[in-house]
Image 1 (cartoon, rainbow, N blue to C red):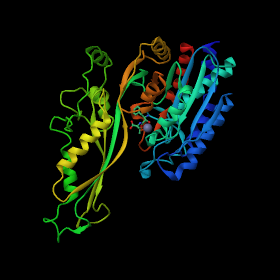
Image 2 (cartoon, protein in one colour):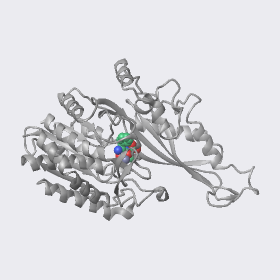
Image 3 (spheres, protein in one colour):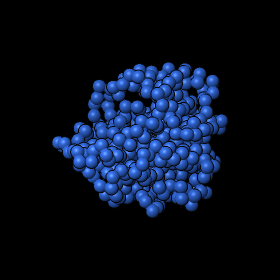
Image 4 (cartoon, rainbow, N blue to C red):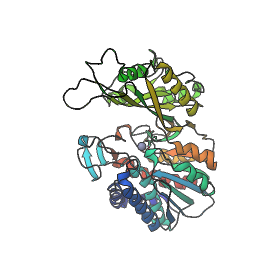
Length: 456
Ligand code: BES
Ligand code: ZN
């Protein structure tokens, strides 16, 4: 069993691995849009066929939504789950893409070679890093050094409606030494990372209604309450002048990070100026007195994701609209309770309504933050393995995003999640022109080969 031979095999097979990823990227598996249901199914079929070609015992498992792909391969004392998602985000606004999002291409850019296309980084390119590492390992050694259960989801980008019931029903199959999840990022292009903190997420959509029909703003304006004005007041009231969120009880369960963690994060030398500079900004906009890294990793937020109402088409229309709409999301940390915050938020909005206005709410996802234990020696072993592949030593980091399944692995199956990924901040996930660096893909595959050896 020679790691060097596996790494050499990965290098030699890179072009073929890229071709396989391109084939998966060509399938427009947008989970949130019913028009792409057959494509989600096709992506699941593609993965079943690919894992079967490795010798896995694998099948497509139906759910009320999109299918899961589950399979096992390998033998050994150690058993690891691997999770990734094959669904992708919608592509709109399509006019901002420089090419068809589902006609992926390897491109040369001033910062290196990239794989361009929807899903390249989130999460098809990342999930294939693990599959390709297994493929190379098997090609060289005939079999894997451990048992792997693949668990690939097709609903992650649409809030995973089928996930918890499915996990409850397959609890036993999901018990393993660790759940490896490849859906996060590097700290930067030199420093690989194991993510140990994820923020939770609470989504709320609401509609404020004033008059029972759209009105002429000259005939009624002044006498009739405008619901967009009410919506603007509600949204403006969600933060105070120091950037704190004003929903009553919102900070219940928000911990201060320990001095040790603060010192460790300071040691990472995060460059907030460059982080914001890359997106055309310069001043951190969160709670006063917090570092930018705290703002994204360990502090909760409230963001308006969309707001609409009235006439927004070309030209001009003097309408006094009947309705105003908004979608907002809260990122949660520590022990914040999403359902308690939902109730408190809804009460706050109702209390802010003037006479004659009403509000209807529609809740989206509600997941708690996750903080994962790294005391299992496997974490240090994985950290050393990552450090052998990348220029600098691997770091334990937080993540501003949310991956609710990490908490489900722990709570439903008792399996500790280990989050390792190779994305970069400039991958433009969820946005036009998503990319994954060829280096992330190549070194990602090599990293997993090293980790498999270290953990087995
Ligand atoms: N891969 C992301 C999570 C992520 C985001 C990791 C940023 C690292 C950096 C994942 O696919 C995702 O987008 N999650 C959603 C939550 C989900 C419940 C819709 C998110 O964070 O908004
Ligand atoms: Zn995503």
